[in-house]
Image 1 (cartoon, rainbow, N blue to C red):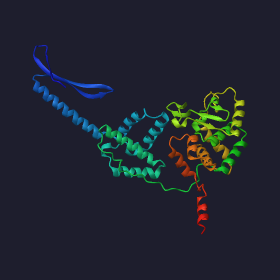
Image 2 (image 1 turned 135 degrees about the vertical axis):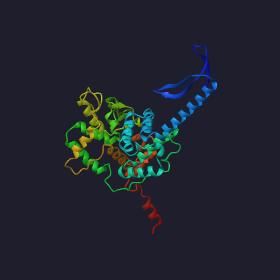
Image 3 (image 1 turned 90 degrees about the vertical axis):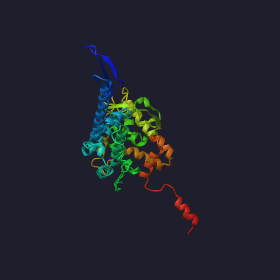
Image 4 (image 1 turned 120 degrees about the vertical axis):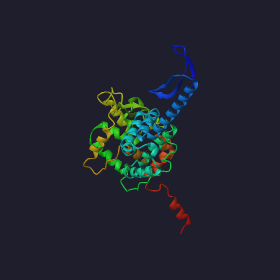
Length: 361
């Protein structure tokens, strides 16, 4: 920011300066001023320009909206997650944050205002807590870039939704047996193999649909990829996390069904392949399930519910938390424990009876 002298065409000495004012379209931007008769006049102009730029920047910071900050945060966030995760996050922000807070200046947000908004989300949405987390991330980004000095989300609490007694989103042993009997009645081997794998391995839908024949060896499945949804639709990509890459043992009947299905499809690459040589669409299993249980006493569950079904039966069969954690591919034992707490309706031990027998009164 040095003031420099130079000679004009007429031989007179003049003064000027060049000042950096930030980036524009990813490139450094400078403002140049010259033609001052004295160094003092050049310095005065420089100081005035700096003051004007600072005031302009402060006005810009105060005027920036939640939507503008969110868009900046999303660009940064996109480089840290898979496309499928980004798409879900962007959709939640567009559907729930922009309509309520998008046009508001982020510098004007108050804890009370955000508490009321989070309360509203919590009442209307199952994932109200997630919306608070997104606003927290947006505000943290705003602090890092100088748009606000404190985070108005920090003091906001999330309402705990009242638990309602509803049917669990998984099958118990008898319900699963009834469902698989309905699948058998379809006489469609592809459906028998699919739902058998979902129920007897606990693998995620995307992991099952991405399976290639080479991933199956005798009584073992190698889970090493999954169907992911990106900007170009569904494609085969990595599993959810490092712990999701695992080997799953199969029971004899599941292996027999796979053998029979393999003999019917000797030239395919994927176990569940469409006519284009790609995995079947992720929406198809849900459609099949609804068709199968239609006009029956078996209730429909989400496809992900077969994962919880498998977990519940593993616990009933006497598996440890660590064994179930590995089989399901959880990176954190806490996730497995949360499922265990959710699905367990009765204590699985006889300590109460043993204690009463010992006390004997």
